Length: 220
Image (cartoon, rainbow, N blue to C red; front, top):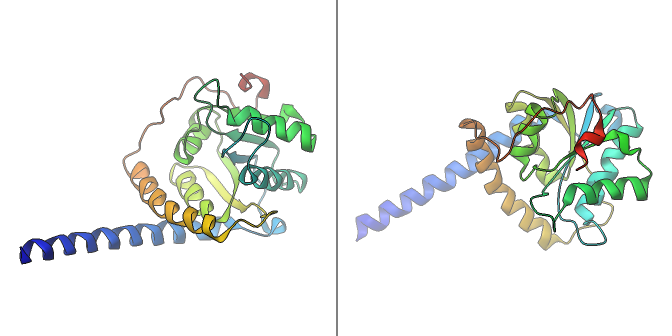
């Protein structure tokens, strides 16, 4: 029994070391490509807005902060188009059209600038489909601080010339929520590391819709 428990303890220690090591690798790999000052941000063609929770008549604060950050990127001449990626896996739940409507109705964004990825079910699928479906080769991803390293890591490992811009925190999130996000992100980085390593395929791909083309082709 003593050997068994020592073996289990050693295995747990190896797993913890692997998780810590992968997280440090992803964070350090992405750090040179992450920006908090809009004036330092290099110009890219498209601003990617990853999806997050939406509700029947509103969007979450997480979505709103990402949208405001992306609009700021566009208004400062750092991007020319928007790619909104999210979960539209059922008729009842549609992140991307809710985000698009929020952008056009609240911020008067020209809808012809907004491309929608209805099958961006994860950050990995968002980046993979940005490359293979929307023919994106350079972009800035706009999201919260906790999420940026993973998003940039995946994009660059998939061959995109991508940088990250930290979305503004317009309403301070509770510390308990931030702690939960950071804990969950630790495991998400490990998952992303292996998705990249094994070149995992998205659930859906489909015909190419170049980001340089007609945005309305992506709205349904």
